[in-house]
Amino acid sequence: MILMGRTFGRPERWRMFFKQYAKELEQLGVNSTGIVLLISFFIGAVICIQIKLNIQSAWMPRFTTGFVTREIMLLEFSSSIMCLILAGKVGSNIASELGTMRVTQQIDALEIMGINSANFLIMPKIAALVSFIPILVTISIFAGILGAYATAWFGGIINAEDLTYGLQYSFTEWFVWCGIIKSFFFAFIIASVSSYYGYTVEGGSIAVGKASTDAVVSSSILILFSDLFLTQLLTK
Amino acid sequence: MIELKSIYKSFEGRTVLEDISTIFENGKTNLIIGQSGSGKTVLMKSIVGLLTPDRGEVLYDGRDFLAMNKKERIALRREMGMIFQSAALFDSMTVLENVMFPLDMFSRDNYRDRKKRAQFCLERVNLSGAEQKYPGEISGGMQKRVAIARAIALRPQYLFCDEPNSGLDPKTSLVIDDLIHDITTEYNMTTIINTHDMNSVLGIGESILFIYEGRKEWHGTKEEIFTSSNERLNKFIFASDLLQKVKDMERTTREG
Figure 1: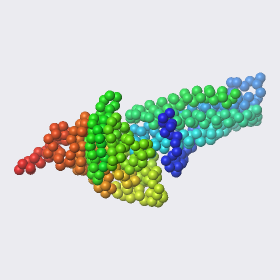
Figure 2: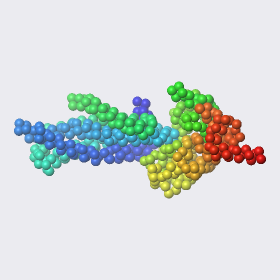
Figure 3: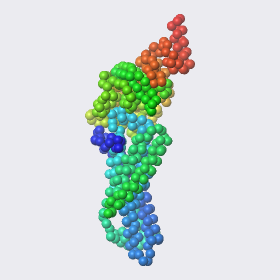
C-alpha cells in the first residue's frame, strides 16, 4: 500500500513520463503481440478441432463448433488465459528489470537525484500495460478465430460456412466487453504485483530470480481469483 | 560544508555507528576510510538520506537534513551528486542519455542546451566520442567517468563517492582520483569519498576520517597519517608492506 501510494502521484516531469510510457508500451505491449498471435491462433485451431471431433455429434446443430469456439475465445481464453500467459512473460520481465535496477543501485541513484523512483519506474509500466491490454485481447480474439478458419481451409475438419454461421450465431456484444473489462483488472494485477516484487528485492542475483518467480506465481493466483469474482459480477 | 553531530545507527539491536561527529569541509576531498564492515557505507547512506540515523544531526551548510520535510529534502537532493561503487548507470540508456537524465528531469533549459551541457560534462571526463554507446559496451573505468559526468551535470554542491576505485586497475584509479579532486576544486564542492584504497588516501586525502567498528577513531590529513601514533590507524594503513617501507623511509629521512 505504501508503495502504491508512492507510485500514484503527479510525475516530476510529464515529458519524461510520456517518454517512459512509450518505452514501456513497446516493451510490455507491442513486443507481446507476437506471442499473443501465435498462441491464440493455435489454441483457436485446437479448440475448433476438439469440439468438432469430440463433442459435436449428429444430434447437435452444425453450427455448434463455431459457436462454442467463439464463446470460449471471447469469454475466457482471450482475456483470462491470455493474461495468465502474459503474467509469465511480462510479469517476469518487470520483476527482473526492477530487481536488477535495485541490486545495481540504479534505484538508489534515482532517489539520490531527488526523484520518486516508484512513480518514475512503476507508474508508466502500469499505465502502458493497462492501456495496451484491450488491443492484445482483440488481437487474440481475431487470431483465435483465424486459427479456427485455418482448420476449415487447410485441414478440412469443418465446413467454412458452418463455422461462419456458428461464429455469428446468437452473438452477444457484451461478451467482448466482458473480456476487455476483465483484462484491465488483470493488467493492473500483473504490472503492480510484479513491480512490487522487483522493486523490493534485497540481495543479489538469486533474490532477483526469486522475485521474478514470486511475481509470476502471485500474479497468476490473483488473476484466477479475480477471474472468478469478475465473471460472476459481469455475467449476472 | 557538511557537519555530522552524534550520529548513531543500529540494525536489529546491533550498533553500526556510534556517536560520530565530524565536519567535511567545502572545496576539499574528504575521505572516510576503514576496514570492510566498519560502517563506512552505512555512514555515507545516513548522510545522503538512503538510511535514517537513529539519533544525531546531518547539517548541510547549517540546514538539518533529518529535520527537513519531504519537499525540502527533494530540493536538497538536487544539490547532491553521487558516484556509486557499481557506477549505477541506467543500462537502458546510452552514455549521453545517462548524463542528460538529471538535466531532462530538473533543468528548464531547452533540449539543445541540455545536450550541450551533457556533452561538456562528457568532454570534462575525457569521454567525447562514447556518447552513443551503452553502459554494457564500455569498460569499468569509463563507466565510472560517465557516473562522474552524470553527477556533475547539475553543478552539485555536494559530491558523494562510494568506493569509486572498486574493481579498477591502479592506473585507472589514479585517473578517477585526480578527476574527482580536480572537479571538487573546480566546482568548490564538498566531496566525501568512501574508500579503503591507500593510493587514494595518499593521493587526494585532504581530510581523512578513520572509522573503526562504527566509531570515529581518527581525523586528520594525509601528511598527518605518517606521524600518527594511533595504533588502530597504523595497523590499518600499514597493513601493506610497501606503505610500511615508505613510513620507515620517511622516519629515516627525518632522523637523518
